[in-house]
Image (cartoon, rainbow, N blue to C red; front, side):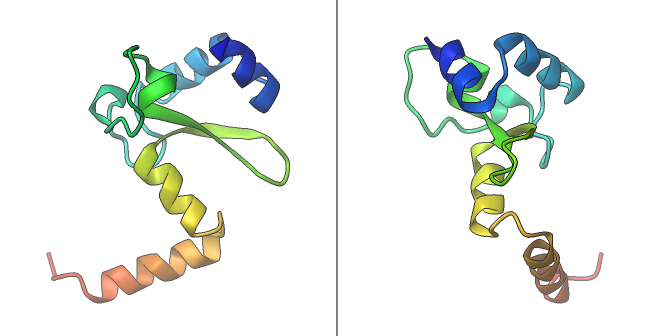
Length: 101
């Protein structure tokens, strides 16, 4: 049933998602956290990568799947409206207050 959801919603099978996960070396595409170390925001009786730990990120305009993200990274880019300009502005802002290394 879960695979049917991914097929219907994103147009991808678990086989495609497994290949994408392998390409990302089992990690979030943004922060690089290994999938089992990503906090699971959803309680589930199953310990699975796609149900609990990583989300299918997609372009809301085209529907194209971009990658697999942890909940934190998925929410972050959503709050930034998937806009690279806002993301760059946030990056600049954070760097302005960072201690020199």
